Length: 238
Image 1: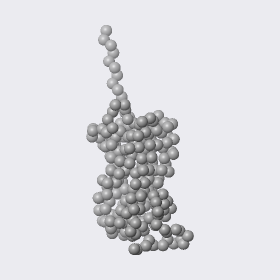
Image 2 (image 1 turned 45 degrees about the vertical axis):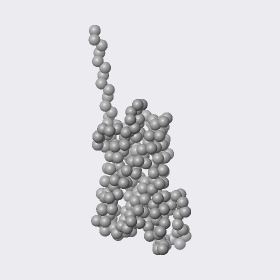
Image 3 (image 1 turned 120 degrees about the horizontal axis):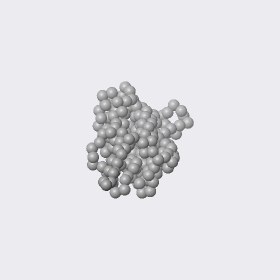
Image 4 (image 1 turned 135 degrees about the horizontal axis):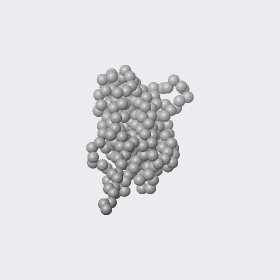
C-alpha cells in the first residue's frame, strides 16, 4: 500500500482518520494531507465520511435557517438543503472531470473521489461555522429578501473556500490551475437547483412541498425581493 507523503512539519500526525470527526479535523487543518489520502486503500471510506458529513451539515444549516418561519417549517429547509447540495454536485460531476482533464489533471477514480468529497466537506465546514450567524438573523429578522440575500452571500463564501481545496487537489493531480469556470458553473447550477426545489425558506399554509412552475433563479430571486402584490379589492357597488 502506498503511504501518504510525509508533511514538512515532523510534529504533524499522519495516522489515518478513524472516524468522521477526525476526517473533518484533518480536512480543516491539513487539507494537503487529505489530498494525499487518495493514494491509500482507505480513500473510499474517507470520501464517504466527508460526503455524509457534508449532507448532515447541510441539514443542520437548513434547520437553523428554518427558524426564520419557525414551527414545523423548520423541517422544510432541513430536508431540502442537503438535496440542494447533493443534486448540485451530481449534476456538475461530469463537467468537473472533463474540465479537470482538459487542464492537465490525471484523475484516477481515487483522486477524483477524494477531490469531490473534500470539496463537499469544505463547504460543510464553512457552513457549520456560519450556522450561528444564520440562526441569529433567522430568529430576529422579518425580511425574507434580506434573509435570502444573506444565504446567497454565505453560500458563495462557502463555495469559495471549498474551491481552494479543489484547486489544491487538482494541482496535485497535474492541473495547471484552479477550475474557476467550473466553480462559477457550480454556483449557477446550485442556485437553479434551489429554485427547482422551492419553497425552501418560506412555506405558505396549504401550498405543495414542491412547485411545478418553471422559473429561472434570477427571476425567482427578483420575486423574493419584490413579491407580487395582491390586487386591490373592487369598491362595493351602490
